[in-house]
Image (cartoon, rainbow, N blue to C red):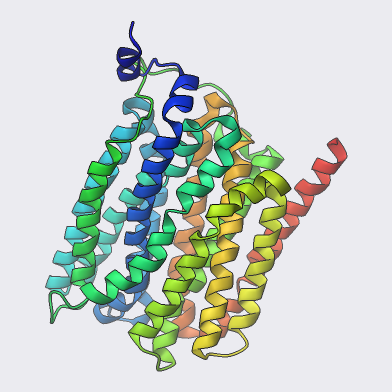
Length: 409
């Protein structure tokens, strides 16, 4: 049997695929991540503001964004099972088609000025997010073992384009369908999803097995009893939850302070750069210092964000606070992903990854809805003060893992 037929059947030698095509696949997934994260950057910047125009109450402004993350949480396991049966490429392609439909649905909802339709469109986009959220794991699987942590970080580095391009694209597309504000932003997302469908066809990923294999290994509940797995999930939940809570409230808070949409775009742009630019070297830092130390550094940066944001409401405070928040997210999330890949066996891959992402997006969903409610009822100071609790809890979990690791060495 030739290698080509083996690859089509999903029976190719996994080691040969990694060595021959791993770096190409990582490059393709980095480009796909860049396009997907650009869409997320646009959604993050505009959804809360669009929700403010459409919602009956300002406290519901971030509800469409929360609906998106709830849908991602609910779709994470089905997306993993779809890819288990049909393969990564088929799953990633399906996810982009769903994103295209969700973006067009969002345009229609804004044209109709319907908050409920906009809420539903956010849920469709959330299903789309569940599929492309596995890019980083696919990169780790395609790369040589020694290149694994760098592969994860390089795919995450695709978000650098999102940090720069997302806010710029939002500024130039928001009035395309004037007087309907922000509809053009979602049309731009639809175009990027279509481009992504084409890009993903160049990724060399193993196909699905001819016959679905039986699930083996530990259940999700048993995995969570593993201290390393639990710590990785806790770090990912905290890093992403804290970031979303503060970031989603930022454009609304800046508008409340009399700052312009362009000011908010500038701050979110730098925040996006801070989130993803460190990925060019965070993989190397993890290889040298270990995932746990990088997560500790991320926790410290989140504290810097909290203190800065509570020190004033000038654009400089927003800028520095959101830069620190972005850096903290990168160190915690990339570190958590690397730590997670050390905590499960090959046969547990689908269950472990889906469990992690389901719990992470559950936290994101709560944080997103709470963000708008807190900002519009208690204000910016409350949004920032409340993140101290999850940061302390994550610190305690990581210290516990650290002590356990030292005792076994």
